[in-house]
Amino acid sequence: MNVVTTRFGTIQVSEADLVRITDGLVGFRGHTQFVLWTDPEVRGLTWLQSTSAPELAFGLVPPPASAADYKVDLRPGDRASLELEDERDLQVYVILNRGEGGGLTVNLQGPVVINKRRRIGRQMVLTSSRHAVRYPLELPEPDTAPTLLPATQPAALRASA
Image (cartoon, one colour):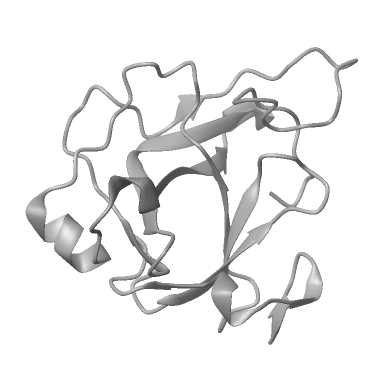
């Protein structure tokens, strides 16, 4: 299947790459069909690309190691909507944002959780104020390799992120 994007042109994906986010994402409720697409240049970066809106894509990374106490507690209703039977099928991502001054931040209060076996996802809205909406990611020294997460450490992203 071909998916048209504004960042990468037309990308070819398989049906197995599709993810249905039944309730959409906060601010984008009308978009429910996405593709999880690994960035071809930045290791550790995954794109949640809308299949119907070429301009709608979200950069996703695993929660940062620097947020050691970060945990997503799924309620029974969340488990049911994800059709989650086995915790090992759960993937947790946080959405990247460009912070003021050009740095990168992640939204720890709005993680995206995906049942990778069933290809169903949802954006959680955590009510705990202990996690920031714009949690800063530290950039490595300029002479390091261009990877986003060599385990879970961030690096520079292209300007379109």
